[in-house]
Length: 172
Image 1: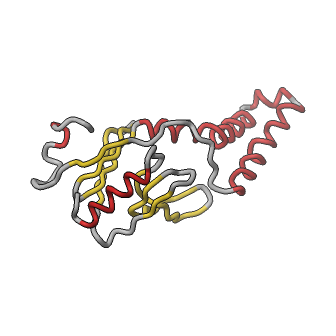
Image 2 (image 1 turned 90 degrees about the horizontal axis):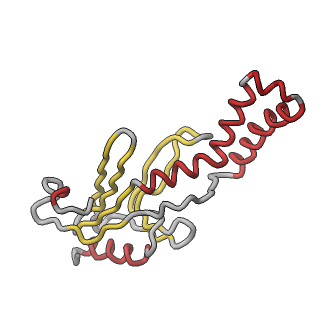
Image 3 (image 1 turned 90 degrees about the vertical axis):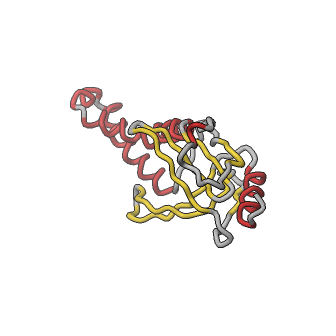
């Protein structure tokens, strides 16, 4: 969303874009918990053992299905996440933060007001992120999972954090 025309009608009259970026789309192997890894090892290990000990069970299709699911959770989900990040764009205006996604079902733009009450978190660790909100959703082994919301996988998270602080103070 770089073009000025694409922002036409989306910004308030006194609003200006002050920063744009996108997350790294590199494939990164990250697992939410050791329990999930253990579960997937069992999930994929049993059918793998069946196929190795009796190759004819491969024809039944059930071990193949379980192996496919296990492979997705071990490897495929990380490629899918990288693909999604490659189609994600971040923008920051003098009043709001925007996260734009282009997915299989079309384009989506979410905006989040940045006020002096917005809690900001700088994460210079593995995620290299600036968090400014919370989202809720389902995850594999729990119903309601609270996740931080913001700009992640940035090349310079500290610089973006400083810009967000300027927006908070009204100096942007």
